[in-house]
Length: 185
Image (tube, rainbow, N blue to C red; front, side, top):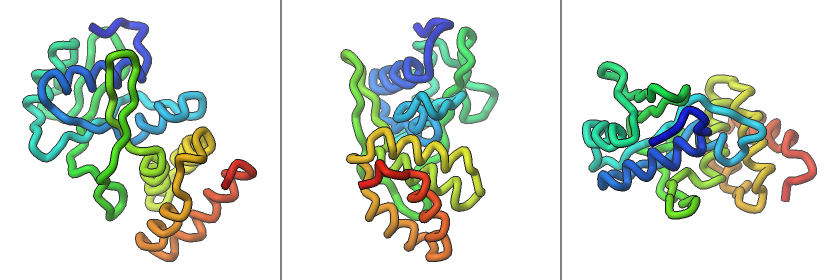
């Protein structure tokens, strides 16, 4: 069970373990992935997991019951009586902008495993929020995630993706690059 002092990371690993025990594959995405990669710079109040196409929400609901989460009405959101964090299951498929995400990363903590967006796709996800909704909090998260592991971020891929989304977005990408500062490769 998850205690009242659980962190977002604790919740993410517990949910991943419960899903795995139920034979369900989910990938941590969104702001919660950014919070895992750069916890000192970004915080999220929920854990966003996108399920594989072959998995369904009802199976996830059964899996999450085992760790104390209950579905809120008919929504895709689950809450726990002892903690403030919620778990959300955005509809798939797993994508960023117009691209499907094909590669993920596995983080390990003891015997627990958490599938998460790669650092590059996490940055891309936050950039999409900045690009399309002028969300500067998402831009700050993208910068923090990139700076925390700049060697894992494919800047050429991000630039090409930005261009494919819309050449008009390159000015916003340039702002992202400026904020990265001297840590940029």
